[in-house]
Amino acid sequence: MKSDPRLLTVILNYRTPDMTLQAVAAALRAMDGINGQIVVVDNASGDGSFEKMLAHADTIGWTAAGRVRVVQSGRNGGFGAGNNHGIQTGLSDGTRPDYVYVLNSDAFPAPDAIRRLIDYLQTHPEAGFAGSYIHGPDGDPHLTTFRFPSVSSEFEAAIRFGPVSRMLAEKRVPVDIPDHTRTVDWLAGASLMMRREVLDEIGLFDETFFLYFEETDLCLRARRAGYRTVFVRESEVAHIGSVSTGMKEWQQVPGYWFDSRLHYFTKNHSAFYAALATLAHLTGGVLHRLRQYLRGRRPADPPHFLRTLLRHDMAAMFKPHRHAAEPRLTDPVSRPDGSAIVSE
Image 1 (tube, rainbow, N blue to C red):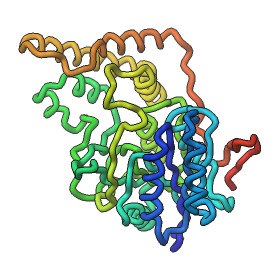
Image 2 (image 1 turned 45 degrees about the vertical axis):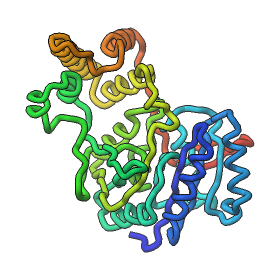
Image 3 (image 1 turned 90 degrees about the vertical axis):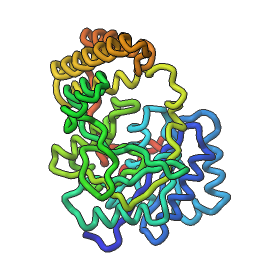
Image 4 (image 1 turned 180 degrees about the horizontal axis):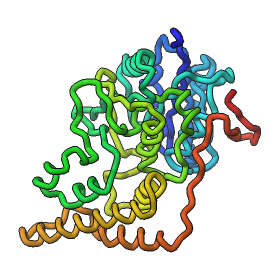
């Protein structure tokens, strides 16, 4: 392994320029002594974010120092598409990075957090991805460690019944936050480092996912290619959470969540498996509602969740299934002036 690996950090902004600039500052501190660069991608915010961040980077000297580049994606294709744009933009000198680090715009690495991830991947070549321990501003731990979804996990999550959860404990998607470094199926993408050679082999984020399930899909592709995804407990990152998506204020689950869920199951298993997963969720959800009704309590799901899930997936059965091929690191990306960027 290289003693001085090159790192490309990608931070995606959507209408949170002040928060994003704080994340950039924290990432720069954590990259002290590391050979690399940060690419900030404005995901077509349309609110002046790009201009504000570009001016700040110039004024504070980040641009002149060659440590930060601010680019415009040109379209809001979602989390995966925006990060793909930053990854494909690459390092300014045209060299290929050894590692790609995706950091949320509301996430702030501890001074040694990025180095911890690099060191782990440097010494564990069988690991393809490595992610951090995530905590809130007050130190409260955030759950970011998961198993891959399945028919069984859909039933367990929907029924919300202790005996069933205990029986299906090894199928539950959430994994209790480990107190030590260990392999997991997939990690949330708030702070995720990826070996560039793995991305060469399996491709980048599937841009069919607008938001949600894109990290799950990427980690599954890595697993199928023989690479581990590892939770590195010593790497700590503070995270506010849901700033760009507004998830904390959701009154109902948006349509793109249902799109992503169905695409994940259909793509990675089959249309038949996806139908079984939906049937399992509906069955568990109905049983949960019956139990809540008998106890005089409201269901835990958002309003009309099961009805929307059924209608969505039934409608999708009569539409031709489409999904874009995973972009590769050699795919061209357009600069704001229309010229092409190709990572070499």
